[in-house]
Amino acid sequence: MNISVVIPLLNEKESLRELTDSLIDVMKSYNFSYEIIFIDDGSSDNSWDIIEELSSKSDTIKGIKFHRNYGKSQALHAGFLKSQGKVVFTMDADLQDDPKEIPAMYDMIMNDNFDLVSGWKKKRFDSVIFKNIPSKIFNFAARTTSGIKLNDFNCGLKAFKKDVIKSINVYGEMHRYIPILAKNEGYKKIGEKIVNHRPRKYGKTKFGPSRFLHGFLDLLTIWFISSFGKRPMHLFGSLGLILITTGFLFAAYLGYDKIILNPGGRLITERPEFYISLVTMIIGSQFFSMGFIGELMLKSINQKPQYIIHKQTNL
Image (cartoon, rainbow, N blue to C red; front, side):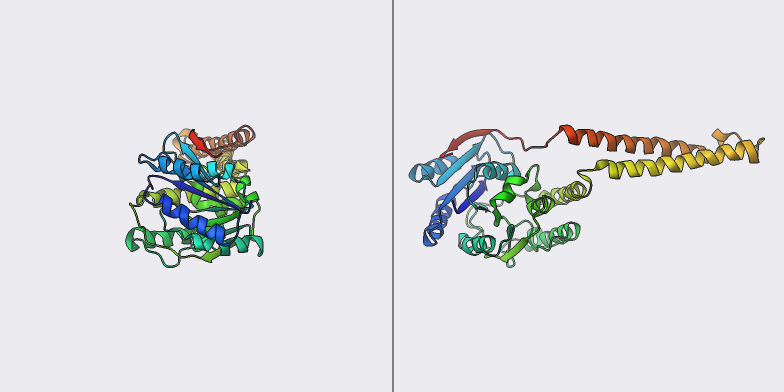
């Protein structure tokens, strides 16, 4: 199979038929073998009924319905597990991503040998204050932290080699950072293509302003995991040893001063250096213990997304 298109959605009943028709037109025009996988992330409208209707008419239309709303990352993870195409696309269901961009991005993967190609919504039809400006700040922070030179980390339209999506774990709200997750797994050839971004035709966005705060917090998580996720003792153990050593040196100085230099002076417990020594050694021991526990957890825990699939069709 040439292409799998993974489409997470929440309450997008108005756009599903139009999106499906557009995708099928593109696939037939280029003679692609394909599958379209809709993941209904707990919609409260009749989105699932439409997906079932579409899948009953074509074996290439497939659907997964979650028991409740789990989030976009969980939906993408479920779609990635089921996808079979050599190249896997992700796109949003709101018609803002243009299916006509698929052939060029497919060519970049197959002929230019990119591991991942991310869309860049250079000209956006979103709110300047609530989306465009925060998005620019967010993308700058992501570029600086990750070293990946992408202009639009959060674009829903992306293309991946099959090996890439089968080797990464998309959990929490990490869908924004799939390029970083891919880089951490050793996939270095990451490209970008300017894509057509269209105004939302139906309904309203499902993401509020809080997503940018969550995005920055997730970025810090990704940075930590990238730098120390496989060796937490290197961070916490180093901090712990520095603090323990600092505390020990203060304690040694106090002992030397009390015994050798000034035997009749103040009690050690009356001096501020004593409490600095005590606190730094206690905190240092806690940091060291955190690193040790982190190493033990790495050997016993493999974090995987948690969701319950309620229904499936054609899978």
